Length: 605
Image 1: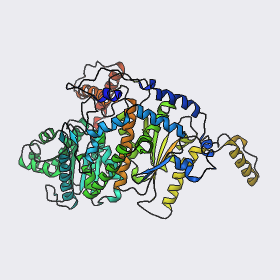
Image 2: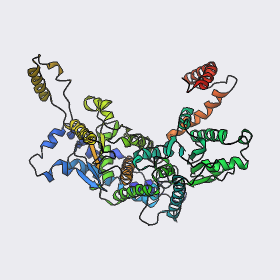
Image 3: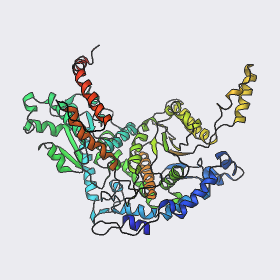
């Protein structure tokens, strides 16, 4: 198709073809959806459900707008849609060449156009036994080889065979990474905690704020601690700063003071080799960082985006926590959803449907954000993980061809586990002035069956989507306040009618699975990854670069020496930044003595 011949078709010098593509908002399918949206804005979910009340159960909305795939149920009936809506949304996807875009990704074409890279995180969890090629080279031997190396090291740590410099078995693992090198494995370690070896402590340090590293190591024995330094380039400021401080922490207690200052000594190299592992796409840089120490370095590749790298060696701390077999189960789940996404017609394709519904609200109803609300405490970091995956992928304002977009792209993604969120921000979801589409994620079984806890959790889970969809009318509230007055003998509180009314008509998706196990987690993550892909493809943006994070890094490098210089620097920023730097320098110097006293007394009393 013309559109993707332009987006993905390159000659040998990697130049775009010169033909012009249709603007997204000028496409006939887009204009058709605009007209349809005007009609749907006056519809209410109460009426949409009432319309088929007399039909057989299998023909009603709850069945018509739901599907099961890979052991997951998606009920999207509580959306402001009709069959015509879905037909028109699918037509938009077809007309935009989404099928070609999906195949281009799975085939390893260089769809990351700005960095001229393939996008093949799907190869990391390819369980088919088939080839996956990048520039005519099968990458699967390398992928499977790294999995074997990860499994070997994980098994040694889990069985106590990996010993530190003093001969003590490793019992603590700390991952040093940020962004995609942190959020994915940290989220998954929490999600799969029931499958983890509880004799091991696995922690994650991402922030360059020293507090993160200090608190993570505070109660640990350095002789039993293994650090994993995870950085795609091995130049990430936060990660390398934390790695240097972790190295100093280890050597302070495990090496003589004279040796600690000799990085080339055999003793220091031995300590580093026993207490550090590295994960990087630049293995030579990782090896050089350790000054010749025989530290094991695990490879992943430049065709794996950081925020899509959980199933690469970035997942090493997760494999150590849950074991190689459970990690492979996770990959099986990913692969199942990958194949569903690649092969299923759009009308029954779960990631496509979620992606199209997101576009429906984002671009036609003007919704600015999207909530992810898992009703499982083990998914406490799930929303934060996809906050990065979605907002870093689709928070773009430039098309693949380099033109400004004139349509809305990625939403603000956020969320918390239920029922905590109910007692925090659900007030705004129910009665606020903003439309916030939400995904509710639940499970039929609890990992921790205890009394009626899970039944109460699930009752709240189901009640919230019902309340958001249908609300409570003023007539219903009037009847309630009258009944209450009759019961108590007090005057009728007519003044509360509006306050206690719920408009409803708030769209939600309900996602249900049997149990949060490794396979299910893999399926859920892949579901959202591919939803993000669908939206980026239709918005004509590159979902696999992140230039927006670079400017702040560049400016920070300029500011750092101005903060640290002994003499007052010549400041040439704007007046606000200059003043802030001056204030920081002045108050840091004044507080230096007090801070030292605080460090000396910490932990006393």
